[in-house]
Image (cartoon, rainbow, N blue to C red; front, side):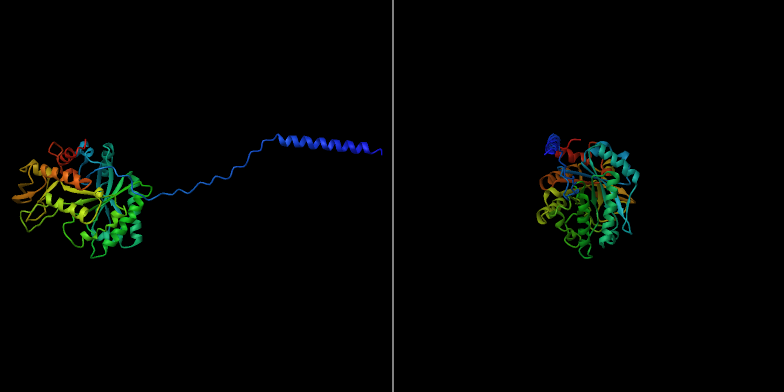
Length: 360
C-alpha cells in the first residue's frame, strides 16, 4: 500500500515526458526529400537547316586574289563557295591556299554571306575514297573538321562526275547521304551539290539519284549549265539560253527536283568553238575590256597564238533572261566564278541582282 503513490508518481512523470516529446515532434518542420534529378541525354535530330530564300551563289577559287574582288561583289551573294578542298589519292582532304581561304571567309561574313567549302578532286580519287564505308566515314570526318575549325556554314560537293557504268553512282549516293547526316545533325550546316547540266542522257546524268532530294539529303543543287562546247564543231555556244531552259526542264520538270532546290549556273567566261580550249578560254572581264561588248554573246578575239577567232559568252541581256528564267522555274543563280566578272556597272552579277531586286 505504501508503494502506490510512488507508482502513480512514476506514471505521471512518464506521461508528462511522452506529452513533451509528442509536442516537440509536432512542432518540427519535415522537409521531404526530392527525387534525384535525371538529366535526359541530348538528342540531336537530323534535319535540314532553314532555307533562306532565293540563292545567289558565287564560287571563289583559291588562285584568285581576294583584294581584286570588291566587298560589294561579296554582298551581292548570300552564298560564297570557296574552291576547293580536294580529295587526295589516299582518301584525305587538303584545303587549297589556306591563307586565301581565311581572307575569303572574313570577306563573306563581313558582307552577310554564308560561306561553304566546295569539295573537288580527281574522279579516280573520289571513287577510291567512296568505295568502302570506312573510306567514306573518314572523309566525312575530315570535311566536318574543316567546317568546324573555320566556322563555316556548309559544304558543297563538286564531284565531276559519278557514273552509272562504274558503280560510283551508288557510292556517291551513299557518301552524300552520310555527309548529309553529319551536316544536318542539329540542323546546323547546309549541303549543296554541283551537278551536270542534264542535257545528255547516259552514265553521268543518270548517276544523280532522286533520293538525294526526296529525302532532303541535299539542300540545293548547283546546275552547271555551261561548258557544252566542241573542239571540232564551229559556231556553237557553250552556255546559251536554250541550254539553261533544257537544264531546268530536265531536272525540275522531268526528274521532279523541287524548284526550291534548283539553282541555275551561269558562266563568267567565254569559250571558242571548233578549236582547242587550251589558252583560248577568256574571262568575261577580259573579253569586254577588249574587243567584246557586254551587250553581246560573242566576240572576235586573239589569244594563245590564235588570231581572230570567235569566243562565246553571256552578255548582260542573256544573263538577265537567265535570271528571270531561274526566278520562274528554280530558286537561285550560281556563278562560276566571281573573279572573272567585272567590278563596275557592266558586272554580270550586278545585272542578276538588279533584275531580281537584290540590294547590295
